[in-house]
Amino acid sequence: MPQELRIVLRNVDKIDALKIDDYIDANGYKPLEKARSMPQADLIQEIRQSGLRGRGGAGFNTGQKLAFTYSAAGDQKYIVCNADEGEPGTYKDRVIMQSDPHAVIEGMAICGYAVGATKGYIYCRGEYPYVAEILNAAIAQAKEKDVLGEFDVEVCLGAGAFVCGEETALIESIEGKRGEPRCKPPYPPVSGLWGKPTVVANVETLANLPQIVDRGSGWFAAIGAAGYPGTKVLTLTGDVVNRKYIEVPTNTTIKEVIYEFGGGIAGGRKFQAVQIGGNSGGIIPESLLGTQIAFDAMAAVGATLGSGAVFVMDETRDLRDVVCRMAKFFEHESCGKCIPCREGTMRMFDLCEKVGQGKGTAADLALLQEIGETMAVACFCGLGQAAPTPVLTAIKHFDLLAGKGCA
Amino acid sequence: MKDFQEEEPFRLQADKPKNWFQALLQGAGGLLARGRDAFGKRAGHQQTETNHGEVNQMSNYEGLFSEFKGLPGGIIQSYHTIQKEVGYLTEEAILAAAKVFNVPAKNAYEVASFYSYFSTKPRGKNIIRICESAPCHVAGANEVIAALEQALGIKVGDSTSDGKFALELTECVGQCQDTPVITVNGQPFGNITADSVSEVLAQF
Ligand SMILES: Cc1cc2nc3c(=O)[nH]c(=O)nc-3n(C[C@H](O)[C@H](O)[C@H](O)COP(=O)(O)O)c2cc1C
Ligand code: FES
Image 1 (cartoon, each protein chain N blue to C red):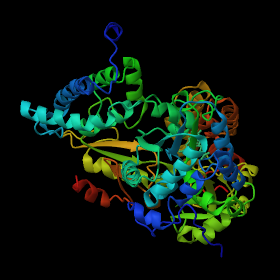
Image 2: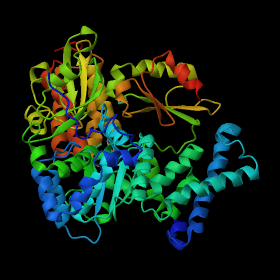
Image 3: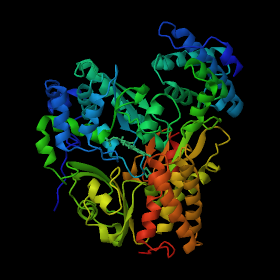
Image 4: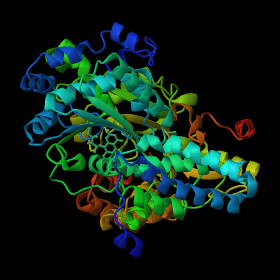
């Protein structure tokens, strides 16, 4: 039976999140001290060698990102923690921040030292005001204990916009504007917040850093799948017996996640499909359950790891209805900046509604496919590019016109 | 727009916090007046009819806004504060914010209209949001919507006539271990059923 491995969740139920002394007793803030005793370039090299890749969805090598920001010229640099967590079915960043806020703050301070940034922002989604309170309390304690040195952290509360999880839209939002994505390049490590070199990293990515600094890159690189080492925090939702969160090595298969950790399908029913990574993720049939929950393994089967949401659907679910709901999400969340996304999400939703009502035709599916494929290449940012994924994968793996239990 | 071009730009200056407050307070005064128009005395500010009440309310604002003093990009955070106190963003508040944060009025409107958590229309004091994202959807969000509409006698998007509740839809609020989920004023309530709806409402 595969086991959980808790790195970012190591302190869950073990320490009081609001007691910095508990965190310090659990070896907290010592990795930061260690990091500060290393030359910046060595620290960045260590993080790069660990193989840690972003847990926010794009899977970019974190050490590489730090290296770019370190080399970029700028009188001021920033560390931004992406705590927007907007993918439906995802709450892993919330669990990390609620149970161990100092791990995230320490991770930010490590990045701050590595690239020469003295200011950090945590962009916390508007849906989590109670998490922002915990973060603010933790920051106040860290300042009082003077563990952060010259590094300062501030919490920014979002206001309900999925697109603000996209790193440049997020930066716009911190700057007090509409959360519309910017043209890339330049990427944030070159020109980010207020035009300064900026590291944007996900909560889970940052919470890994103290452990990597403490235990070394070799230790981390040996865990899980070679190309995407470490663990992934997953949140299990839908028709699974155990609707809970887990942290497992990245070479764990989807099947193990659903059947070993999730306890299988609820009510003794049969599996139909699973969507991984939130609404932007692909809908996966039974034949692909052997896939590892690692970035490249998922991409190889036309799916994504994304945020690590695992949404299980049993045989009784009408996929047309579920896919239609997902299309509506994107229609609502498109920021409207670019036409392929603004029009495309609307047209796809219209067509999905028709299909959902059982009135769809083969021509409708062909049109959905054409719109979706166009959006995947023509949309300005990742929102529109990924928006067609659930629809396209559902068409690919299932007979959408047949409806209920159509596998 | 004329106002903004001809006036000396209103800049945030650490040594002039009073101007900053005053501009926002002007907005706040307008907010309170509007709140009354919409919901009579029950807009959640019992004392707003009297001058005394307004003064109290304003000094509260002063305390709340001081948090954002000199904060670059603080317009979004200040909108949160205004909404928490009054429930929505009025035209006056938006114009005041434009001055305080030294942006064109159009930008202040753009921000107010972009984010789904900001409302530019009056609405009920306690904001109920029903998550309709896929995991909540398959767990029965539609039944929860129906139960809430029935219990409150309104449709999604409306407020009760006594100004007590507003009913809105939302996407995932990150409490998916307990689907279906609703939030009231940001506080999550999970595993909601048609029966438990009234228990939640009774708390407000
Ligand atoms: C529409 C959209 C939404 C996103 N939402 C999030 C999010 O909620 N959290 C997150 O960490 N990254 C999100 N991302 C990815 C970020 O743009 C960025 O890649 C990430 O924050 C980088 O951090 P990482 O390298 O640690 O993953 C989103 C991207 C897109 C296109
Ligand atoms: S899907 Fe409803 S709370 Fe996450």
